[in-house]
Length: 149
Image (cartoon, rainbow, N blue to C red; front, side, top):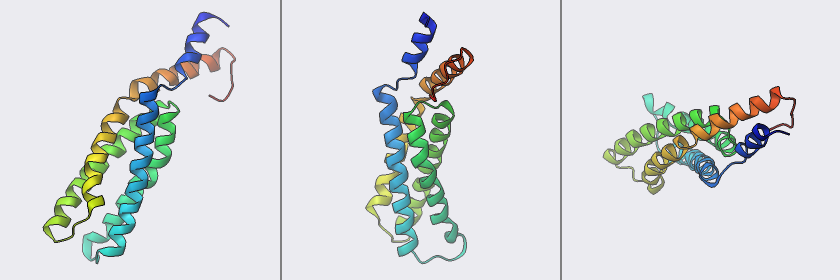
């Protein structure tokens, strides 16, 4: 094993900020699923409101596996996770304002807006490490080291 392969193997080891970013994305996904269930159970839906819990559910369900892949240094997951967290921030921010104006107060609904924003920032910080790990994974694969990284 030469020096480049040793550095590539070190690159594949996730550091603490990457693990925190992935964990935050997964936890936000779980809270998003709970928020979707709460919204569907409590809010009487008519018209365009019917789609809101399903959009929340889709964002939450996608956040959990993306969080796992971010924590294991996948560049595509970091990019997708950042996009999901940004979209969650926008959706939940708009929904929080709309629901408050219409008399529905949910602490989870209010807490998930800054949680999604923080998750977006944390996930964005993992993009470069994920891309570097993808490149290292590709180099190791080309050199014959196929260990399922």
